[in-house]
Length: 162
Image (cartoon, rainbow, N blue to C red; front, side, top):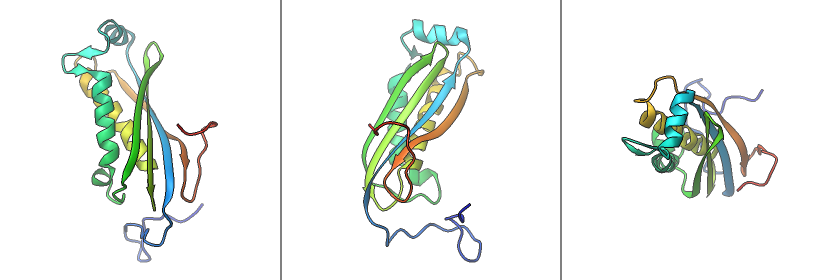
């Protein structure tokens, strides 16, 4: 196991110095899932994903994109990464399971996996917020990194990154 990167020699929290790292093209894909009670899922399908607050899909896409761009404001040791691209895709994997997939890309010295994870997670939280009036039994689950390229480590999803 390698050392933690955000700890200084005195064992205090510290931001990583990326000044000497090379700028590379970086891309990451993260996913989050929401599981709905069957009755709530049916209600959403029947209403074409519209609730009193508006379209859950469109609002989640906007929220996820905003989260990607502001990750450094939410996670203390993240650097402000100049985002080149962000795509939020939302689809039903099962009748009661919604998948949110966030792809983020940047050319920078560090980053992009936390941005993709934040985008997927915040989009899921937005869907929960918009649907909680229907049920508090909605579950956000399985937020994880699927793939990452560029930088020191690569995580492969089994296909070319979109």
